Image (spheres, rainbow, N blue to C red):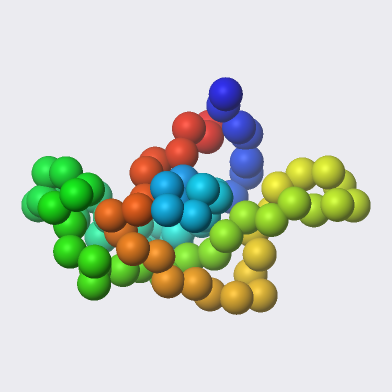
Length: 86
């Protein structure tokens, strides 16, 4: 299923360890691509390579997803997969 989320400053990833959707600033998300290119597989990426971002939450008022900017979180790069969002 494809989602449509309009957040041009962020790339969207699925956190496979937490099973949720996260937003990583576009400039910072380049680290994810470089890391996967270097290690080739998620299993080979060291646990200490992390990146900061935000998680998505459900906006009850509008019945939609939104980025929760109230807390900057740290995610392991090995747990992130590009989300299928247009």
